[in-house]
Amino acid sequence: MLEKLEQLSDDLQDISSWLPFDRLPLVIAGPCSAESEQQVISTARELAAAPNVKVFRAGIWKPRTRPDTFEGVGQAGLQWLKAVKDETSLLTATEVAGAKHVELCLEGDVDILWVGARTTVNPFLVQEIADAVRGVDVPVLVKNPINAELGLWLGAIERLHNAGIRKLAAIDRGFSTYVEMKYRNDPNWQIPIELKRLIPRLPLICDPSHIAGSRDLIEPISEAALEFGFKALMIETHINPDEALSDSQQQITPRALIELLGKLRARDTTPSDEHVRSEIARMRSAISKVDSELINDLAERMKWVDQIGELKKQHNIAVLQLDRWESLVEDHVARAKQLGLDSDFVKSVFELIHTEAVKRQL
Image (cartoon, rainbow, N blue to C red; front, side, top):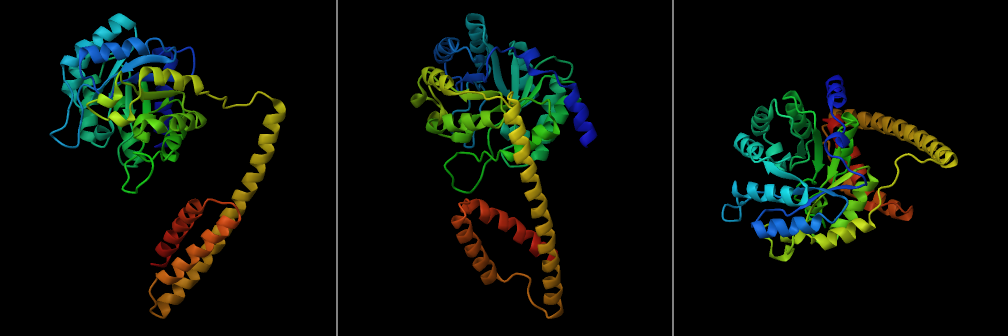
């Protein structure tokens, strides 16, 4: 698989060849949904004044959870997107969820298509879209699936690549979770980072609007994305967000977007100062040594786990002793706090270790 992904990465066209930009971050902006021609054009006019904004986005087909909610204006919105391009010179982008959507968008001269999170989870629909764009030189952006599964994300990208699409990018919009948290969707940054590791030349775009779920959290999510090496952002922007027909809480005005972009700074990934590079190398060497010790300690721990497991089998003792586990967690969390470590992080680490220990004893 790695060899195949390496070939895929090599095939990709650099984003600057199909989406020229002169400053970072590159921004794709526009309303969650196209609601009226006036709303679309008014939003686009203000966005055109933002030098970072190169693409106007708007959903015209909306995959909503409940049937009695606004599901987009449909084909009529394509003419509004064309009017945006004619008046502002911004490129246009919209979501497609099947071959018919692709056909209509290509006829309507939409510049960029994206595959939504609810579609990425369905290989049948992704393949339908891939077949529809076969032989067409159109950029396609692929949002991560709603569930935290890297394989589905990779699979969607591979299907489009197999169809001949070389102008590809991935959009991280976070992952659904049943756990209550301050964000609408879990950022789970490790998954897009792993995607980038597997396909190094694949551009990563962050959608802080869908991760945040609240306009107040868009700025810190955008800052975090830039720190993780994202070069582009997709931010939902509406001329009157409080009156939006979908996702009103996570949209901001064009003016607020311009103010936000004025605060953001994309930092260099490689330091130019030789002394700084040397210091970073020294510290990384120390971290590598600690990592090696951690691996050795884990291996030693699992040896004892195996011995305990054998003893339990010999004496017909159940693998899991819940009281013992709860006591260990409490002790580890208390120790973590004393050392200035995040207790949730330490708890998560030991939950993984404990899960592996139980598996080995079964």
